[in-house]
Amino acid sequence: MKRNIVITGGAGFIGSHVVRLFVNRYPEYNIINLDKLTYAGNLANLKDVEDEPNYKFVKMDICDFEAFYQLMQDEKIDGIIHLAAESHVDRSIKDPFTFAKTNVMGTLSLLQAAKLYWESLPEKYEGKRFYHISTDEVYGALKMNHPEGIEPPFKTVASSEGHKAYGDEFFYETTKYNPHSPYSAAKASSDHFVRAYHDTYGMPTIVTNCSNNYGPYQFPEKLIPLFINNIRHRKPLPVYGKGENVRDWLYVEDHARAIDVIFHEVPQQFYLN
Ligand SMILES: NC(=O)c1ccc[n+]([C@@H]2O[C@H](COP(=O)([O-])OP(=O)(O)OC[C@H]3O[C@@H](n4cnc5c(N)ncnc54)[C@H](O)[C@@H]3O)[C@@H](O)[C@H]2O)c1
Image (cartoon, rainbow, N blue to C red; front, side, top):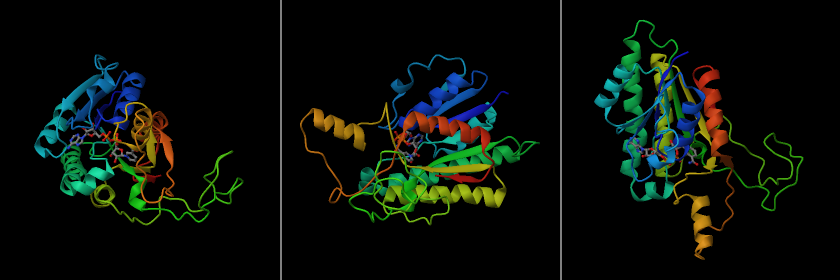
């Protein structure tokens, strides 16, 4: 089946892996990478697919409603995978306005353009999909009630052989939103708008709230590349608080594969962690 899909933020870390996977896996699709190319966007991430006939790059700000609405019509877009965002917590503390603008107003602009275009078609929302990539940071922090770590088997589900657990709570799709940084507050707000477009207009939406990603092409300000670079240059390693925070990590190519399966196979209005 032919599909016309926009992947926003495709020049960024996770987006570039999603674009590569879709371009290589679905030669019959028309894949449009829409990105403003902020400091975090780098088209060199996609050198290996830039000449593929099913790939196109469009430089655009997701806040530009008119331009995006025109693109929806010109390219007959039937799927949106939305990753474009300001994504670095430390920057959000210094510049919260940019985060609210891009993450909240940008997402709203995409939703509204998609709504107007899809509702103008005879088949309306049939076969359409708006997939919003969010973060588990909207849930806040889990309690670390086993600071020394406990060995498996655990009472809870999300454990794996050979790893210790430091708490016995997990985030679920039903966990209450509890954002703490301007970044997570803006992402939480964008999630609420996506939910509102489903509940109010019947738009087929999906939201996933994943944990930290790691892997190739990550911007060097993020924790793992920053630590590797600092170690190589014998610089100090900046750790928040007392260094007791525990993070969960997801390999970026596994995430891209999950996005592919979720985009194609899960029913609409789904929330997944
Ligand atoms: N990286 C992680 O560990 C992680 C974890 C959970 C969720 N997420 C979410 O996944 C998505 C992608 O994260 P990432 O780490 O790849 O981010 P990133 O910062 O590496 O890339 C973001 C991309 O969005 C583009 N962009 C920014 N503002 C834009 C605008 N106004 N218009 C168009 N493009 C714009 C940038 O140019 C860049 O290419 C984000 O929505 C983020 O909140 C990331």
